[in-house]
Image (tube, rainbow, N blue to C red; front, side, top):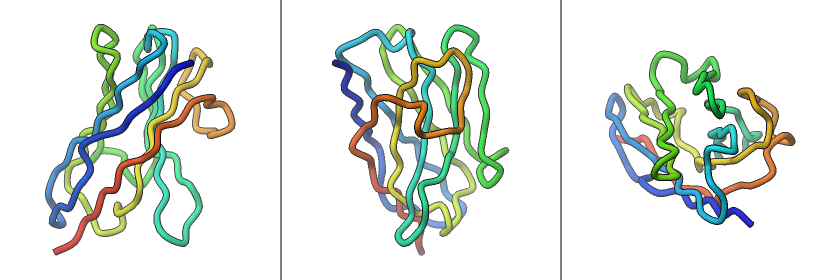
Length: 124
């Protein structure tokens, strides 16, 4: 059974950058489309970004478009989320997830495996 582990979270000042990563084990990541979600305190889980298997096409949530970049390295079984121009409202626990669907998907119910999350805090 696949396991997903996030890393790279931390504290960053507004306007700064941070990269979070997701390592997949137990199954080759190339079989999955992958996604990032986040949950801020007191808020609903929010779709952040997704990247499709095979094609590598990407899709972003409106609040992060043009600031965040999702990428994958199937040879290393890892996925990254590069976050630039961070804002305090980006503060959340960030989760990576894996899906058997062949395309990018925004719906969390279409993801079958999740990591434990990594905290990102944007504050001065």
